[in-house]
Every structure is written in structure tokens, then in C-alpha cells.
Length: 123
Image (cartoon, rainbow, N blue to C red):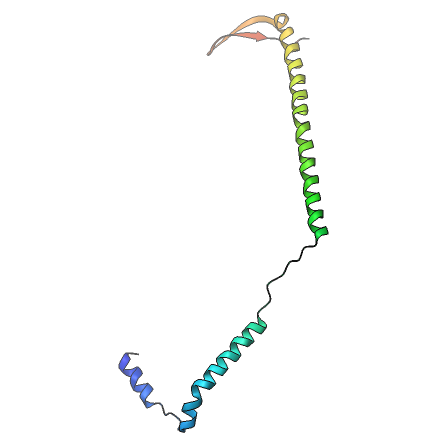
């Protein structure tokens, strides 16, 4: 629909007859209706949640946080001990294997990569 068709349709619509009082009170009625809708919208708007923490809840949460931090620190302090124990155990096994090395070296092996020691498993 183009602009001319729209104008012709608008002009062809019949407007009901209104007296002078209607047109004089129209702005007041529109403002009153708009204000009523605004108040209605404010009345139905959900209120923002209001959080009220008591002193007990604040202290309780700080205590729980302090306990968690202390537990984490204790857990971390034991981790190096466990790691060092594992490394010491692995070092003992490596030393035992190296101590048996000369007795297990019986032959040389040659392949495409060169000359290598052939290590035999003990019987």
C-alpha cells in the first residue's frame, strides 16, 4: 500500500461527532489514565530481594571459610611428604637394578641402530 492509498483510507474513515467539552477534557483523561497504568505497573512489579544477614550468619560463614582454608593448607602440607616417599622408594629400586647390572651383562647385540648391550633376566 503506498502513501496516497493510505491517506485516502484515513480520510474516508468516519469520525464520531464529539462536543467541545470532550476535546477540552481529553488531555486530562489521557494523563490520568497514563498515571493509573504507571501506578498499576509499579504495584505489580516484583520487589527486589532484600538480603538481611544477621551477625551470627556472617560469623558462621567466616568460620566455615577459615576451616576450609586450614584444611586445604594441611592437605597441601602432606603432599610433599607423600611425593618424597614415592621418590625415595623409586630411588631404592633404581639403585638395586644398577647394582645387579654387571652380573646381568652377558652379550652384545647388534641391530640396525648399532651395537647394544644385551641384558638377560636372572633365572
